[in-house]
Length: 201
Image 1: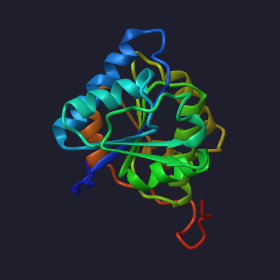
Image 2: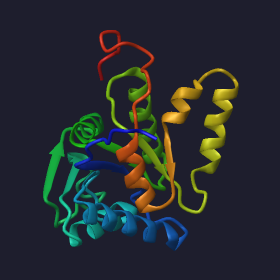
Image 3: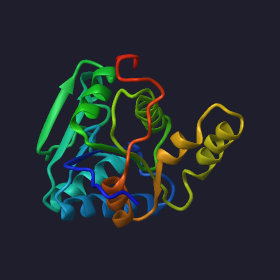
Image 4: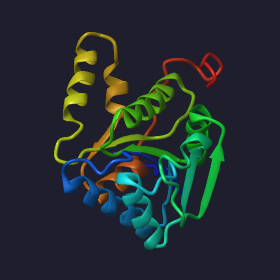
């Protein structure tokens, strides 16, 4: 276990704008939001007031956490912007949204969600591999939701496309307390490239 602790002030959360078929997903989002608030950790997310996005942001805000929403102008009406956040930023497009969310957060966690959640998660995990950032990336697994994806990632390791070290850098947790401790105890892997060689997003 690490002898140092990562300073986590805000966590960038990727999750669905839908609630999903199982009520356990929304309960998990509420639990994570409340746990962050209890620890004094703020939430950065996509700014919506629907689905799991709404569940985690509302629970964190009601429990006293700072919650920062970032949304492209084109989605303000479609994703139903949350009316009660600490701050809400409207950005030009999805690329600007992801860059701003990455800048604001000290760590990243993916809760259950759809293809947008997958896309956001894989991008920040790739950025870690390339040395673009040195922040922990976590998967919050609710009722085995992420297991099929993790099986595919393990296949990539077996076939030589992903290193064991990089695979081990991905945190997989299933309780709020375990998530917070894992983020704080995390140590960054050696990046694939040096900081000078890493491409810039």
